[in-house]
Image (cartoon, rainbow, N blue to C red; front, side, top):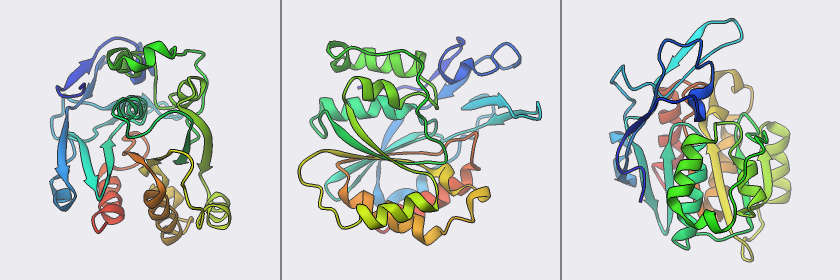
Length: 250
């Protein structure tokens, strides 16, 4: 089991590659994962150690944005299924394969990807099927090769992901209601992959209740759930507030 100990990434790889030469800070922090009861979501905290930066890059106006993520990653059980809650979204790649190794899911999953971004850039890096069962290799691939925008395609090329339902706007939400809301998921595995940046303030024109309705329906259908806080794209206190609103009463 990996992520049981926090660590820094200090090489120009992973998300640390962004603007590495221009940044004074040369390392990013990854916290350890802990178990959390669904009734204890008030224990979720934002990182308060100023040396433990989760993501750092320049905006288009050349202003450096220094971002702190979660104090811990969290593994949360709801009913018979599991949520893994973390900050930078490429960590989802590792947790999908860990779930497959535990037979929570298997290959050929449908991915419901609810996110401000598609996260489907192709970095032309792959992991081979035999290596995909080695969690150390998956962990290294996640934290040395992938970043927040390119972690889905390698999983698709390796056949962990078969189909992707992208939900990024009102039309996508309404299409889900029309085509998937009453669908009974019996024949294949389904992963819900939620980025809470879908609730950033600039997207408030998308109806909150519609977002919540679709997400909770996908939660019921999913075999496995990954949720991230995207420190670069949404204020972390808002992300945690939304997470609690979505999941606390399940």
